[in-house]
View 1 (cartoon, rainbow, N blue to C red):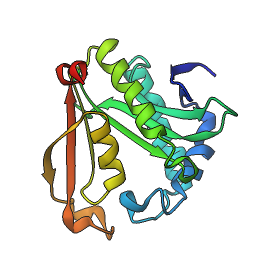
View 2: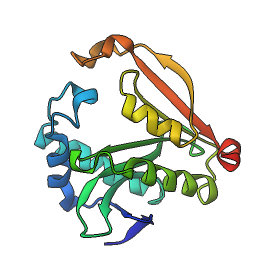
View 3: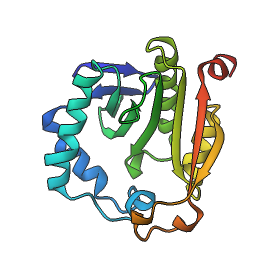
View 4: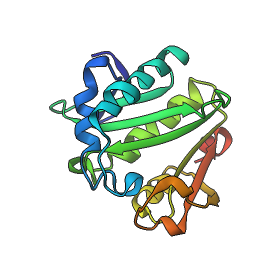
Length: 187
C-alpha cells in the first residue's frame, strides 16, 4: 500500500480498482448518506462502473497529487472512509475542494479534522494551492464545526438544487467555507 499522506493516526492512499467493496459498504450506511441522498445507498453498479473509474482517472489527470484518497487507521489498518482534495471539474489547480466521508464507527474521533488538516498542509506547502473550499448542507452542524476548526470561514450560502430530492434540512440550502494560503499560514 503506497501511502499518499500520513498523520498521527491515519494513512491516506490512492484507491485501486480492487476497492469497490470499501466504497459500496461506506455508501450503504443510511447515517453516512443522510445529508447526501437522504439516506439512500449508492447503487453498487454505479460505484463499480462510474464512481471508481472516475476516481482512478483523476489520479492520471492530476499526476496522483489530487483526488479521492482512502483513509485507514494506522493501528490495525481499518478502512475508515475517504478524503478528497481536487479542483472543480474545469477549475484551476490552485483552487481545490476539500471533503471527507467517514464510516459511522470513525465518527467522533477527530479523524475528519486530522485528515483534513494534513491535506490543507500538503495543499498549501507542496501543491501550490492558493485556496481550499468545502461545502455542506446548512443543517450539517458536524461538518460545519470541522470546517471552522480548520480555520475555514463561511463565504456564502446557496439554495439546494431542485434535483436533490427529499433530504432532511434541504430547505435551508447549503454553505461554502474557504481558507486561503495566507490565512492558513496565520492560523
